Length: 99
Image (cartoon, rainbow, N blue to C red):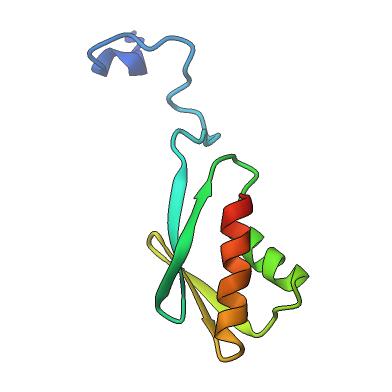
């Protein structure tokens, strides 16, 4: 009977880590470039497992801004509005300064 250790293929021993675990562990911060109508307005870094990109949408909604749509393309978070572009952009500037 062979008892294979998943750590055997690594050049150094890894102890206390379940390499077959189905739980995802956040190893790095995810950073997204945020665009409004194709203009870069800032960066959103997800620093903890509880943070998500939809936090931006929630913030905008709390500011009374609802006339926008959003999508993720790779590491770009794209917001499109046919409403008051400057107001949305200024609100996001405040958001990024406070985060």
